[in-house]
Length: 102
Image (tube, rainbow, N blue to C red; front, side, top):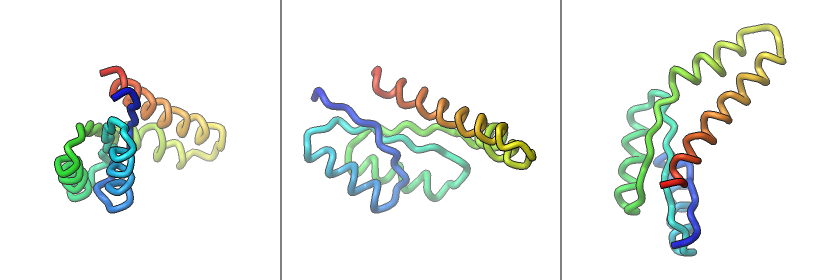
């Protein structure tokens, strides 16, 4: 397969259906679960990935989320908040890049 896609896999119906539709269209699908501490959702994502036979990368971002997103939002400066969001996006893009290079 030439076409690869990384899909945020939550374990819910929407992301499961999106993953299957992409498979049916010929895409090689990689699941990405950004773990923020919800054990039940993480297990649901694993079940969906197993059912669809797609690799699943689970990345624990709870500490980074707290430090780079939540904590800065308690600061009065909107500039700090903007930088925090950009840091979170950068982290997600790094994970996606690693998945697609495999």
